[in-house]
Length: 233
Image (tube, rainbow, N blue to C red; front, side, top):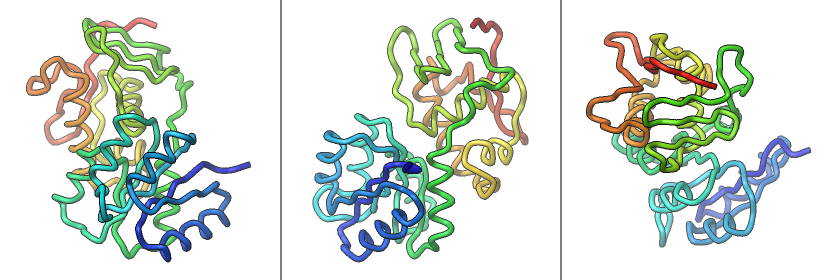
C-alpha cells in the first residue's frame, strides 16, 4: 500500500529521477512533471496527496503554479528552492505552500518534511466537538469545512490543521513553539516566522475584520489563543 501519492515538479531531469527513485523506494507512489503547466494538467486528471514544487521553472513559475494549485486542489505543497531568504519563504507561504525546503537538501530532511506535510491531526480528540458555530463562523472538523457569513472558505491542508489545533484547545493560550511542533512536527519549534505567516493567512480568511481579530487572538509574549464564547456540536 502506498504511503501517499506525490508529484515532483522540476525542470531538471536529474532531480526528477533522483526524487522519483528515492521516494518510490520509501513506499510512495511518485509521478513527475517538467513544468507548472504540466503539473496542473496532471492534477486535473489525477488525485494526489502532495506536490514537490520547484520555485524556479521556465514558463509558469513556481509561485504562480503554487497559487493555481492552491486555488483548485486539496493537496499539500512543499516548495523546493535555492533561495533561503525570509522574503522568499514568506512569498512561498503567501502563495499557499505548506512548507519550504532549500536546495541542496538532505534526503532525511526532505522525507521528514513530507511526512509532516502528509500528517493530519487526529479527528477524534477528546475535547474537540464535531462542529463549531459562532456568530459568523462555522467549522466542521470532520468534513474539514469552514464557512464565514454563509460563504465556503477554502483553507490549505496546513491552515486547517492549524485552525483545528487552535479550536481543540479553544480559550487556552498556546505557545509559538507548541503550535509549531503540533502542526509542523518536532523540528519546527523555533520557526516562528512560519507561524506568523499562517496565522495572518488564517485571519484574512476567517476573521470578519482581520485587522481586529475576533477569533485568533494574539497572546503577547506567549503565542495565540482561539477565543470562543459560544460553542455547539
